[in-house]
Image 1: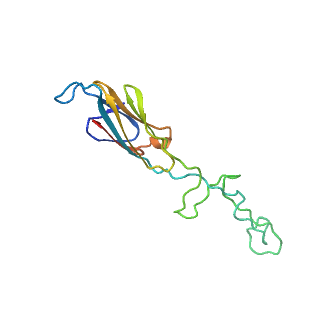
Image 2: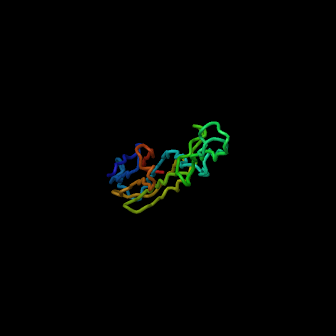
Image 3: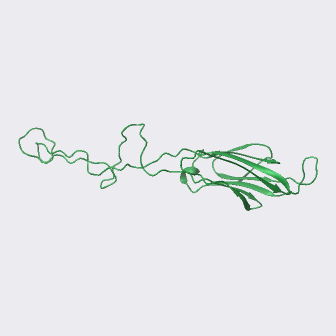
Length: 182
């Protein structure tokens, strides 16, 4: 489903989708529209996707004791040489336990997640402008493009993404407007 844009009015959209504008037959109290410039202005905020992951633990465990005690190292006292406890360990191999955060302010480690927002401006179904690609860490996207139109041309602004995070409710917020002139 497409949302209709109204000339000279900002439209705020939450999420992805398609916005459509149809060029009127005439300029208000003027001649028919033939090769008249129109401008699309676009702004979007992109959520900050923090890095996620389980950390890079050694998997060796944090509790390899070698003191006295029973064979598993948990009983107190005794004079026999024991093996000590083998710690549970954290990390990716071999037990897949999540690495606990050192501090609540410490960001998780792992691959950085980024937006894959793609914005296209189309005229009568043909792409006339492609917004620059979003890079990791980029929090906004803004552009303006001007092109010539004739009466009844269909202008669409298409917001799409292959990233699951971009498809969440209220993740990408945009402000789009179309106006006559440059």
